[in-house]
Image (cartoon, rainbow over all chains, first blue to last red):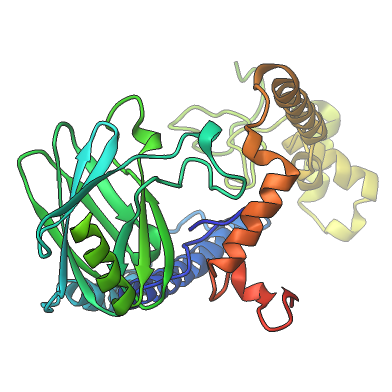
Length: 229
Length: 147
């Protein structure tokens, strides 16, 4: 979850998010270097006293400042494409979760286990406990096992919503009439928060998502408890 | 427009206009009109230059040119006015935004109270949020205090 005055990306809970953070840092470093170089050149133009009234062309420098950006772009493109294909890798998920967006709450279905279904509403600020996170805590959290591949299918019942957990690097739009599938993997236990990311009406800012990542045996206990109730 | 002044070049697309400019150093027309004194000096200029006094050299310069390089290239003081106005605008904008905080925006939600913020921080640390480079990485879990 974001903590106070968090400026950058949240710390990752997933190996893919780690790779995304590395790529982000790499690309941003290149961008900062280019910006500093161009800023320096522009600044030095202010103090330049040289004039060449008969300047017509400079073939060598034009070649250099065409080839050099192309090489810099290669340095950005190769890691980017590597990560793009890494995100699409086939793997065998152990649990499938269906997430349906409504106006203005999420409902979840675990169809692997005799249809566990529940709705997840935001806890209003005036009903929040003393240590509750405003606009983030929900009444029913999604419980999922850690260190397992999870498949999620996102859709919506009315308008387009978007299901996201920044710390896992997942953002999937839920469109009515369509199932979007993605995979993720959590490598530590805890609570992971997200908020609806597609404008969906008056309470778009008030339909958060909370995943409770637990060891596998706790997950099985939770499933059995919910099957019986 | 040129009066009696001597044309010494082609000028701007054929029109001999006087301009003081670093990029085009020699204007196409003299600055002043020819007078008998100037003509005498021009004759003297044709022989040895060491015989010309400093004042005569300056007079010959001012005959052909309106300003020296130093005169038309120095910084003007307008930047002080512009910076001053800019800083005033920033100050007034800042005061207006302060007034918004005092009047326009409502009170903070109840979760901003110190006790609730402390409780939330305790929960963030217990949940080990941002444990790699963020908040929980600064907490020493063995000694139960900040690192």
